[in-house]
Image 1 (tube, rainbow, N blue to C red):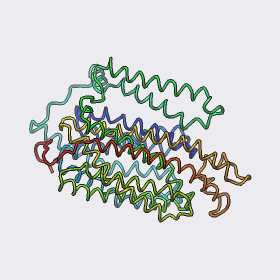
Image 2 (image 1 turned 120 degrees about the vertical axis):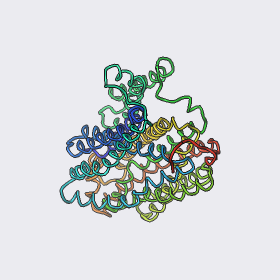
Image 3 (image 1 turned 180 degrees about the horizontal axis):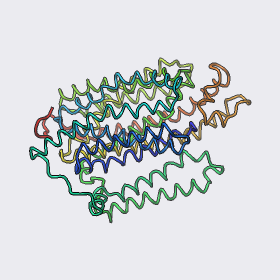
Image 4 (image 1 turned 45 degrees about the vertical axis):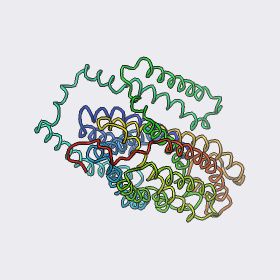
Length: 486
């Protein structure tokens, strides 16, 4: 598999993974939480099976889409469940508790990856999760089914729909705006993928395939806008909810926030190994700083929001300034002579800021909405995040394919095959640490990352402005859910 196609497969996974939440929200509201969770579990396991058996980039890309849809879907179902059962003032705290297991599990990923690679091989790295994931998630699905049946017996749930017929399938397709979803997914994929694939074509930007993809992608996006405006019986985007400025700018904030993280994050793991000479386990520990730090700090943020009853001040006056500082310092410390300790410091800043931003953004989109719209709002939140991730991956791939080979040709010794080094991380790591070739490759990484990080800072400034546009809602005064809640 070509290392430089990482961002291309990520683009497809992010687009389809984000759009899949729209029909999933309808499944959760129409057919039930247990059915939606079970479906996502099956799709997730299928993705792992495909990854374990793949032999080419095409199969891996398809597997990543299945895995992304399934894993994001399970996470989405859990978020909806937490929103169903928690008061708004406590929701940030409950969402933080839901991510707290990452504090432990993140640290075992690196050693397991290293031992699997050195032992049974990378296929079993995916294969073991075809067993672990169902064992962990299935009990929760069974608990949901048990409570659903209990609620039906008590008369708390409306009777389920009748048997599945062609008419009900057609009605469901209309309700989720399937045509609109297909137009948007196809348009975004065709328009964004050429920016990561152009360097593999003989004629590059003049290639007929690249030109056709951009043109037809743009036409599909225009067709999507016209269809949603004039012909769609039901639009999957809740425009009435997006008219609230806090919801709208909350969604836009997620676009630019995830754009920022994917721009520099797409090749960050590779950079840790090549530039600073870390092995897989050590690189995973550095990458884990964000997840562990954000999860830990989210707990404090949850208590602060519960105590103050407000969330805007945390985003505007704390998280975005700190994140801009962290990413900005990475521009300075992206070279191997800076020392890995400085990179760890920047990751701590970004982790504390990132966890706060996500929690505040979720509340910004949920607080102005009624509880009956929570599933749809969360689906839109995931869609905005996935659009941002796809755009970030696209820009990252465009910078990588443009700047990295150019920098390699400029710095590496004449005997080094630039094409091989560009496309294969194994070839990059094959040169001895401290050798002229390895130092040149590390310097080329630094040049490419400089453009990525500058772009990231620009996106964060825009996201900061979006957060400033939120209304300062006092969530202690709001009540969305009824019954037994936390």
